[in-house]
Length: 266
Image (cartoon, rainbow, N blue to C red; front, side):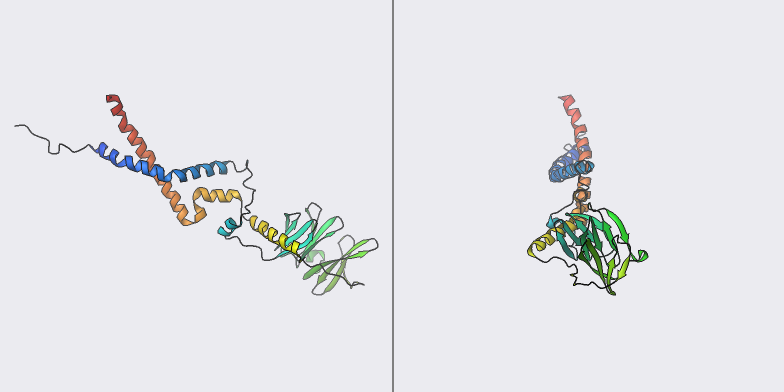
């Protein structure tokens, strides 16, 4: 009488593991393929963000700015259109580019001779034709405080620059060094933002550009790469993809290792 095995059809452990690993290896590979491609593409772009200027390219898509919660500036004003001279809160824009970040909301800006002059409530800024800041005046330099508006008065040999303040009007000397309390001899039109159809369209465009200053394509790619672009759920999803890739690497190596003896027998 011979002893028969108690479990003649029991498979060895490596076959059981291979049977479990094989379908899950295939399913997880298919399910994560799209995300793996996205991670690979965004990784390459991030790695070459300087070459593609992605770190300085700003996002102008309104829906994407809305997704990031980037709001429009509180106050946008157009002071001149040729060339464009405008403000968005405390940013001064010249020819469509931001050239100055003032210490407070800008109240006015105009061309004065070969320069540009801008003011907030407590400071005056003198800029070159290219938008470079040449000088900043304040209380320490003798500038009147609580400014409200700028004004130009034509004269026989040029223009006079005036300031309107809570305490009255002030006239500057030709070099914008000294300010003297005075009253203009003729009616002076203090500068006010433009309010026509053309300026309204420019305000919409400038508002979008001001929002775009807060978001670059490099930041968007980084958030796509990590999944943060859709919040915590996206980060957890990318963590799950990473775990799937680890499982696929281990199961793929195991299946390949178990297939080697079969090839030898054949």
